[in-house]
Each structure stands twice: as structure tokens, then as C-alpha cells.
Length: 259
Image 1 (cartoon, rainbow, N blue to C red):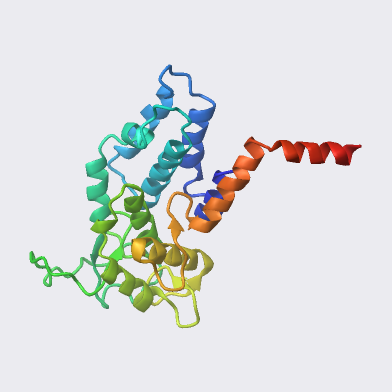
Image 2: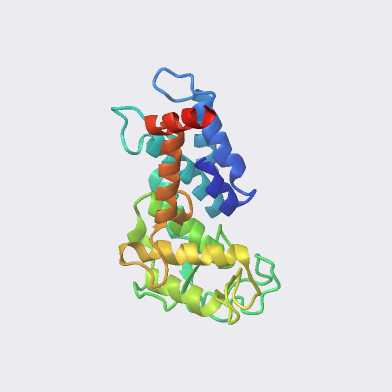
């Protein structure tokens, strides 16, 4: 049941990863200490690959975080599966943080939908100073253009890893609201593109996530594990408990109806 909202929001891209982790935890969990050997091997191979991708990284970290939150062991540590499933958390954080970069209007306002630039970027404006750029976009991997949904994939993952402070909230927020938000409503994939439902949801998810405890005006607190609001996550948890542990009153009511 926990996978349903994740499936609806992630689509087909991340589901193989999410289901793999759940399958090997629930079905193939045959180690004495509670870890399936093949599960850990797959997680290490996935997260130590040289082909990191922001979206897949989120799927892996979200699945591991859900496993941690569902671990019934009385002596289980809060980050048991995160610590075991990710071979190098600092390396992953480094990759995610470096997906944000200064955005300029010349980068992609006339994009044709191709994620790869046709010409080398102009590096003349780069500086080694610590000044914060007015806008920052996020991409999914090296040499890609900034994308609305990757603001979510990367910020959501950093949030799950407890590294919210590493996100340049103001510049990232400006990029979303001033560049990819469309005048007719919703968000586009790239600045200047048409809006669609998928990127509209990802844009709102990103805004709610990077807002942190301060909150984003008009948006509810967000649960980064499931990519839904905290209120919806609480209702899901309550519904799950009612299914797993039905009350005696419910049982008596059902018996009366049968009579």
C-alpha cells in the first residue's frame, strides 16, 4: 500500500528499483541479521555506478528510507538500510549538490526539448567566489540542461539524507517560479516550454521540499519519502494500520452484518 502513491507519482522510471528493493526485503530476506544478500549487492552496485542519475538516486534512497521506517526490529537503527544500501553517502551527497548550477537566460529559453546542448557552454562568466547566483537550476547528470523535475529529484533526495541546508533555496525557487512556471498555469520541463501535469506536480513538490520547515505559501508540508503531502502520508499510515491491525469493534460489526 505504501507503494501506490509512489507508483502514481514516479511513473515507470523508478518502479523497477523501488519494487526490487521491496521484493528482496519482504520475499527474499533470508539473512540472519535481516538483510538479503542479493538485495545489498544490488543496492551497492546501483549506487556505486559511474552513471549516477538524480531520478534513480531518489528512487533508491526513498525505497531504503521506507524500509527503515517500516523496520519492526526493536533494536533497529533509524538509518539501518540507508547506511547499508549506500556504499558512500558523502559521494552521493557530493553528486546531488553538484547538480545545481547558476542559470542564465541564454541557456535554454528556446529549447527544442533536447536535454543535450548543441554547443559547448560559455564558461567566461564562471567565478571561484562564494557569491550566490540569482538563479540555480538542477540537472539529472553531467552536461545536461536544468529541468523542473530534477529540482525535485535532487532536492527530495537531499532532504531524505538530511542535507536540506545544501540546497540554494532562494535561487532554486526563483528558477521554478520565474522560468519554468507557465503563464497559463503549471510548470514546463525547461524554460520556455509548454506546461504538463507531470512537471506541474514535480514543480510543486520541489517548492514544498526546498521550503523546509519555513513552508511554501499555499502548499502543505511535504513527505519526501512518498512524494505526497504529509497529511496524505498520515492518512495512508492510518489506513495501513487499520488493515494490518483491525480493531475488535470492526470485527464485531462485521459479524453482526453477517447475521
